[in-house]
Image (cartoon, rainbow, N blue to C red; front, side, top):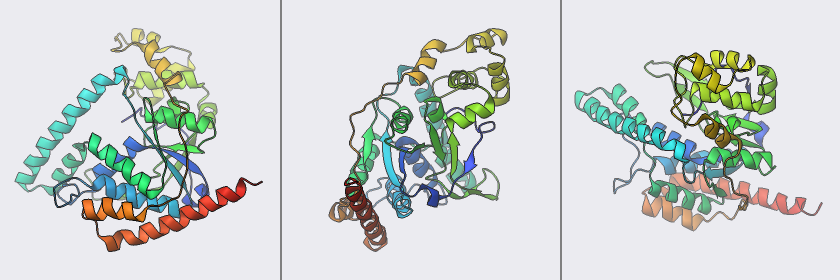
Amino acid sequence: MGVQLGDIIPKERIEFEDLAGRKIAIDAFNCLYQFLSIIRQPDGTPLMDSKQRVTSHLSGLFYRTGKLVEFGILPIYVFDGKPPDLKRRVSEERRQIREEAHEKWKAAITAGDMVAAKRHAQASSKLTGEMIDESKRLLEAMGIPWVQALGEGEAQAAYMVQHGDAWASASQDYDSILFGSPKLIRNLTVSGRRKLPGKNVYVSVEPELIELQKALDNLGIDRKQLIDMGIMMGTDFNEGIKGIGPKKALAYAKEGKSVKQVYKEMEQEPEVDVDELRELFLKHDITSDYSLKWGNVNKTALSKILVDEHDFSEERIEKTMEELDEKLNQKASQARLDSWF
């Protein structure tokens, strides 16, 4: 879920056309969970093949990545590695929430309430090791690079942007800027129309750009203070201080109060080591051992994965394969030409 900074972080709308030629490091787990949640039948059942294996993640990854490449974007998918010890409690809570949502989904199906069924089904989405391996294999066949992070994928993506290997990171979570990503793009893989929860109302979802330094200047704080704000509010690694939202956290930060001081003032005890958590955002384990190459679309391998193994329509995937091959070959040729100058 990540830290909830949306109400106070300045952001600007950005067009897909503005991202042409840009390398974007995408938080793979965040993206795959989106696909598993959104790409479902009206009753909440995920897409499946004839062997009842979930294919929502493959469908989203294939078609959405193809659309990004069509816009001239060069995606890089960054996969989470071993979760930090601080995340164990949160991971267990999320597992319980998914299990409860699954039971509520079954009950809603029995009651014939399809609206509730789909809502609960989306909350029950589970990303398995097999799905992760399938996704990496699919990306390789598509000619799209992926990077295996040592720890959090968002931290690895932030490092890649800091070092010029990507122009921006992409995630729905704001944790990327806590990890120090100079630029964060939200709604890159979920743009379009979205139905508001519990309402028959749709809103437009467009890509938006957040620039870390601009955000800090606008808020009048530095990155360490932003991290402290995140810890006050709650992150993927801690629950936060009860009664503290974005505006209160910002007020405390601008007063120069530390997280520990606010915990004491609010007469609460942190459930994690605050200093350790702050250090996790400032000095997360990353790897510089990766290679970024686009192109060499393997149509045979793509057809085997999608059509032969998972029952996708060959006719439906053909157009995306052709466009992917054409666009990536153009980019590869341009990269080879640019290397001479």
